[in-house]
Image (cartoon, rainbow, N blue to C red; front, side, top):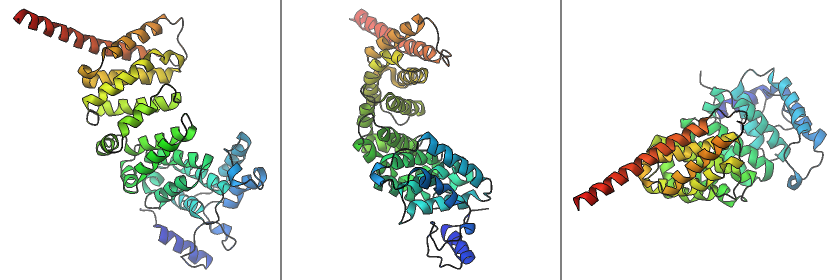
Amino acid sequence: VSPPSRNQAVAILAQDQALSPDLPLARSRRHSDSAMALNWPGLFAWSTKYHDGTAPSKFTKMSDEDRKFLEQAMEEAFGKVEDPNKVFMEAIAQIKSEDRTNESMATALEVMDRLCDDPDVARNVEKLDGLQALLDMVVTVEGSVRIRGLEILALLFSNNPNIQEAGIKRGAMGVFLKLTREAEKTSDERSKAFRALIALVRTLVAHETSLLRSEGGVALLAELLDPDEDPRTREKAANFITSMACNGESLKKEDVKEFAVIVAPLLVSAGEQNVQYREVMASCALELARLARTSCPPALAEAAEARLAAAKASAEKEEGDNGQEEDALQECLALLSREEKVAEASAEAVAEAA
């Protein structure tokens, strides 16, 4: 059964409350709390208790105490929820409300985060007018609320082709690119804006290609792989390159060459980072070599060889290290050495013919 449209849901609530259907769903003195699918006053109590009078410019990320209080309130509130789509609509209304506050938006985003696990909600976010509301919010607000909004958008777009397409039509690529480029280097906002951008286009070859060819995506990825960038952002960039290399359609040989030059020194220094980072960098080198080994410079093979030697020389394996990094490096070297042998054989043939 398809969820009700926003107008239908508003009309239903309005009928229950003897209100005009033009009124917003957001909490107001004229609304009866019992008509709402979720106990919003109960959820808002955390902001009254912990953020009394906090100015928007001073509003920061929730403390552990705040989040624990809100999670307890959500546990109680969600125990009575029958229609997740209706709750999501109410959360959207909180974000769109003219009298919204950073606290009310933060609370609504936490509710959305919980609802994103419901496949029905994730599929219907566009029908519920949630995408535009979230995109408008991350453009107009700053700080921790913007960052949380970017996280929610990334969750909604992830592996969700219909919603990804809807986001593209609503200009999400431009929004995320602008935020990524304007955010301070190594900042959480930059990392989260880039994460949302990747989620928007990942596995959609036409849009990956558009990002690379029309929106300066190659240069942006190169910038995000800078050794001075936050390691988590570098890891995201390398992971995205790996994904595009695997699909074999988005990257060109010249892209492979540029990225291979950048990834090589990151392989050498990967030992300074955690297991997942090292595995991602090794996989990136492997997939670049697999896609176009003739475009990979000698520096990539040298870096892979150096990193492999360092990994093997390590006294003991870290927790979670199952040898994936070493396997990828060995396969990468096998591919690149095969190309070297082919080149040597070709050179010998030319010399003999001469």
